[in-house]
Image 1 (cartoon, rainbow, N blue to C red):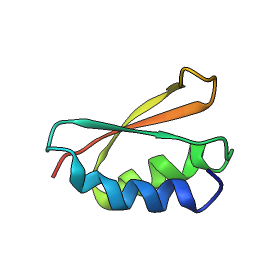
Image 2: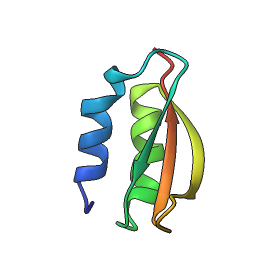
Image 3: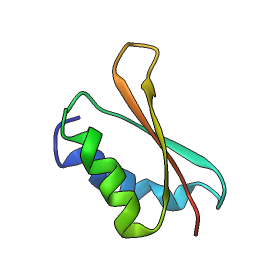
Length: 66
C-alpha cells in the first residue's frame, strides 16, 4: 500500500479488534515507518514496533488501547 492508504486502513480497521489485541499494517511505502507511529500517538493507541511480513514487506504492529 502507498501513502495514505496504510493509515486510512489502520483507522478503518482498528475497531475490528478488541481492546488489548494487536493489528498489523503491512506496507511497502517508506512513509508508513513514521506515519503509523504518529497515528498511534494522535489516536492514543500503542505502537508495538516494526517487523517483516512473510513476503518480506515491512509490517507495523499496533495494539488497541481503547
